[in-house]
Image 1 (cartoon, one colour):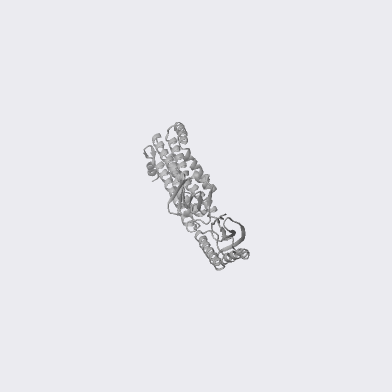
Image 2: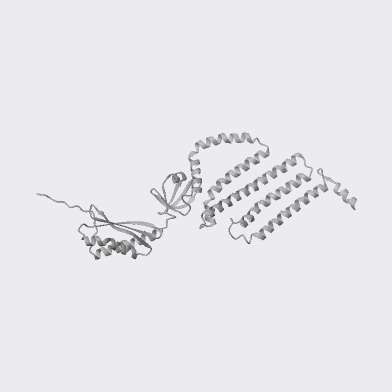
Length: 355
């Protein structure tokens, strides 16, 4: 029996003994089973307890091992074939090229996933009130740019391992890149300002901003342009350079609105009524819900009447709430002045005719 097995394992197929082939296959099968078992163990052990979102440590481990497993499979198959079998140079080179392409593909996917998860973790730590879907939308532009760079490097690496002269290719790309850069200065300027917006964060998706005569809610921040939904409904598209160079009023973090109320009454108003007007305004503002009074004064003698200035705060950033309180306070002032027969000033001119 021993002699039979010795004779069987001594047979050669394509220059390799049956024993060598069986050893190679055995190593491949054992390695694949080991990696698959470890993957099943990780999924079963941690997937149920990784409820903290895709950026938690356990969830990241579950997600990453799905990218690592194909790399381990490729390495096991490659090493077992190359080390256990006697292969011709052509076959060995073919296996090596397949291995390089496979490793590059899954390795780039792994790096891309790690960078995306790191960016999501960083953004979630800064914007804890935002959901993962909103964070995913806000980093889509920068992840796209990073993926382009990663896959470009991967393609160059594969071409170099295939046997092409990468130095000549890189030199040609460098000369062409200079020409493209000179012709695309505006595009690269917008790209640079995209990174400024991403890291400095003068505004975020969902913020209401005003810049010069344009106002609206940020809908998308792209690599070159930012899209704003205006109050009238149309979409405003601005370059990132224009946004970073302009003066932006961001109302997202506003906690309350300051209101300066200016009222004019006619010069014929009695001094006692003039003295009572600041108190009347204070009483009306204090009676309004969600409003805090600051001050009210007889400010100046205007061209057409006596000018009063009052300041109060609307305790909400909501614009509709702000206008509701304005409406309520103005209407009460109008009614109170009418009941006291205090007349509002308006532009007038008195003409004296001499003999």
